[in-house]
Figure 1: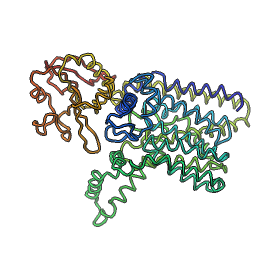
Figure 2 (figure 1 turned 30 degrees about the horizontal axis):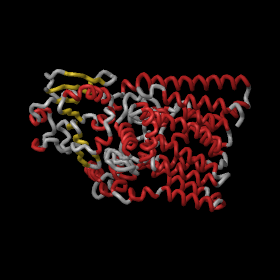
Figure 3 (figure 1 turned 60 degrees about the vertical axis):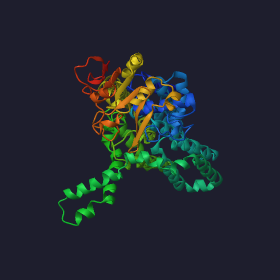
Figure 4 (figure 1 turned 45 degrees about the horizontal axis):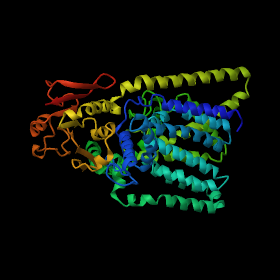
Length: 563
């Protein structure tokens, strides 16, 4: 490496860390329910060696019933042991591996194109990437899987020169499979594609290739019990387009709305045509300019909104990079194309929030690498022109990049947290802090589940002792539709609002009406009770002890008491 690239790379890495760490305890504006679940289970393992379900060092974490993969939980333990069970302890781990992904992208770019500058530009683009920053400032398993896959591909590319790296690359690929569900589909498909496309190379290194397969197989053995159980389908059932409960009614509805004569509606509207259409639609939605450059993904937690997953200024350079790949007999062209084409397959079989930024984050480094290649091709062309053209083009490029970054950062820090704090389940921390200060004054605390899973936020923000929770005689859970509802533990009740009839009541003689304020009061005469819920969950004539607002000023929680 020329000496110039060392300080330049250092600057990129420092910038990457800063963009991910600055005010990370405040923005995103709250920990979401997956973050507190990951962190509390890591805390539980740290303190007891068991998860919240009292399972010793599990290979999968049941959590809310969706069975979280283990890598994110176990790798969160060191930070939580140092910083505690709080925002920094939860989010510093993704900040670190997000920054390391930027470093790996430099090494991968250099290895793919045999060029330090391309690697440096790719690392810079990933460092400032709205898509990547968004998902490495919070504890998302997808961003950790992206790190492992980027590392694995870099080692795999190195293996084309020194075959020992082929074997070593299987370790990060295996870790990716144990990190995120999309990686479970992408990783084996990608490896099979690479082995087929570069079979001549692997035949040449047949001993190393065979050892690689053996190593990956051995590393995958802990998956066997999971694959043989019903747990493996829990998450898939929640998001799949093949969900029978919704699939058949939708097909029948399409047949009923058809104006075609029989038997054409039955021939046109069936499982094969329906699934093929939605698979193709979901897959292709991720290649549109709207997703990549204009509006991005619709899920509010995964994207700042009002801009694409990539900066608009990248579009011409991405196109130029793709043209460069296709116009040259580049050794790793097929590897790169396999990466992006296979990255969107897992999300194509899901049915919610399409296009989806989180489940497709593993494609992100591809775009930065190809854009960097396009930047390099453009720079080489400029060098052939007059010096004044080089200067003008350089100034314009720098100006556009700076303006784009400023627009994104202003949106992210000034607009996004205020407008979308509700989407991040803001308010739980403030509500639980009130509980912590006043719990000794009450016999019963009732927490509405209006915004989802209040029990985990209560455990997290109270730093509730895991051993006490695991062995609590008052702990009561109910499992339905591949989800777990915690109904009670200790002095806490987590009440439905009368609309969630599928959740059994805490007070069995109330029938199927739901857990209502008046019923709970009747069932607990003489008890001092604290109620936390949304406006309207209680009689409005009760004095409000505390009102917690979302950052946009709308009400999140109200806290009232009956003594």
